[in-house]
Amino acid sequence: MNVNMSSQSTMSSLLLVEDTPSLQMLYRTILRKAGYNAICASNGQEALTKFTESKPGVVLLDLMLPDSDGMVVMREMLALQPSTRIIVITANGSVNAAVEATRAGAHDFLVKPLGDIRLISAVANAHAECQRDLPADVSSNKQANDAIDSTFLGQSEVMQHLYEKISAVATSMAPVFVLGESGTGKELCARAVHLKSARSTNRFVTFNCSAIPHDAQEAELFGQAQRGNAPSSGIKAGALVKADAGTLFLENIHDMAPSVQARLLHFLQNGTAAPTGGGEAVRVDVRVICAATRDPAEEMRSGKLREDLYYRLFVIPMHVPPLRDRGEDVNILARHLLVQIAQEEGKTFTGLSSDTAAIFRKAPWRGNLRELVNVLRLAVVLHDGPTITPQMLPPELVGYAGAETAATQTGLPSGATPADVLSGMTMAEIEELVITSAIRRNAGSVPKAARELDIAPSTIYRKRESWSN
Image 1 (cartoon, one colour):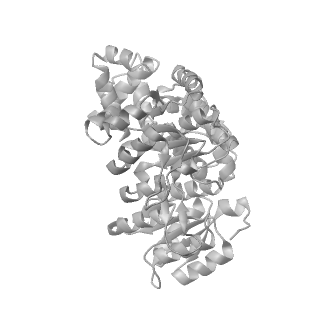
Image 2 (cartoon, one colour; image 1 turned 30 degrees about the horizontal axis):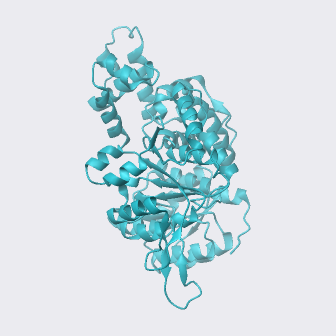
Image 3 (cartoon, helix red, strand yellow; image 1 turned 180 degrees about the horizontal axis):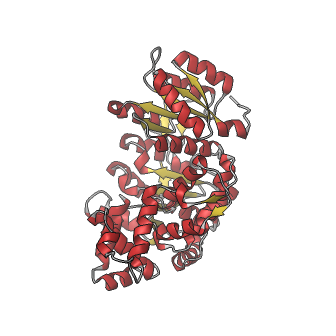
């Protein structure tokens, strides 16, 4: 069904389905203050009627409805309008139902009681997704280039080294293994390799091992033979065949089922893939790029990643640096992303105040680029421009940066001690502050920071991995 919907209606309106009057009023008030026009429904039948009439881009749907199963309502909505972003709402004891809903097509889920920030953030992210009406695993070269420009803007030394390595490996067929913390942009790094290669006019297909249940991975990767006399009978193509002549990006390879790892190794050795459930093997030509947030060598030693597969895939390692090690890049990125987010949300933000820029340089950014996008989006949704000021930022971000600023000054306020400056922080937070400050002072060099702190570099790497989990 082709739904003709203006971008303005997709951006500003949504359908809220909640049968408890007090909660419906509360959620509607929160959403209206954030600039969203919430159309309300109290049961499944009313929800489907208003959905058909208003064709919203985003739906907030309580799974427990008085007259129908919320899962059934969700499936009917997606059948009518597959591009709808549905955020399901569930009680604290029904998280399994929410997970089942996400597997069935829900965009996100929220657990009661709902916090204001979490609610607005989920809706804002869903609206942003509505503007990118693209397949999840394939996008055009122009769109991929735009995404790479948005994330890989930067002038830091560590990023310059990464650019050089991307250019050097792009012309090769050797497998690439991209490493980095969650949210650093590993997929965009892989896309950059693809776009600079001779395969750039063909597909870039993402296969996220963590997002697919073990018992479904084989069929999703190699395809599935469809039995019966129905028109849909035949072979359902898997990710490998979809990526033929292009690039297959295997994300979180350490979460791949052992049996699928064995089949993947066999494919890498002979270049042919047969669909699950029977069918003729076909020759497939793909370049494989893997990514992981964990150390693949450690995953191999622990038995989660086959040793022979590890040595097949871990040929050219590439490390995407965390945002906190990129210096002024964080503000270059923030200003670029701010313009995009402001356009999506219909606001007039154009830049950062000098105080905000200073806070961004010093913040730990545990969530990396994802956290930066969320911070900017929340500020844009909840405030008016044209400049992002510290008052618009989460208190913990301002507090952390403020503590670091005071702690690194040569002189302390009259009568204050370092302990006063760090008051209220846990030992783990202080440790992270000291280590990240040392890395920043040494231009992103972990070995140099380790020498300054008189600890082993492996200690820093281990602690940084724990911060990203």
